[in-house]
Amino acid sequence: MIRNPYTFTLGIILFELTHQKSRQPLKDEDRLNEGGVFITKFDLINRFTVGMVTPWGRGYKKMVRKCINCDFGEGEYDLRNPRLQMAFYRDVVCVLEKMEQDLAELQKER
Image (cartoon, rainbow, N blue to C red; front, side, top):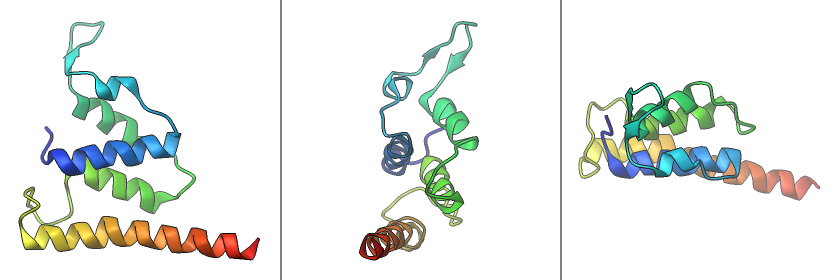
């Protein structure tokens, strides 16, 4: 179940950045698979990210999974909630900023 459409979509974008391409099944509507089993976008991305390998490390994978599941340890799914906003800032924004700083440092060393 998609708990928050905004964090879910961000999780998909971050996942696609890892693979540097779009995953068409994630763009499709929920549907029946070949075996006649109903499968949702949430089921697909959840399955893809469980075994996700990324050159950006485990922290990146953890961030993607938190976005997909809107699970920031607050038991809240509405981004209007200040506690969820703080957790999102800490677990997503700060992680991305740190990655950007690390990349900038690597560029300086070259």
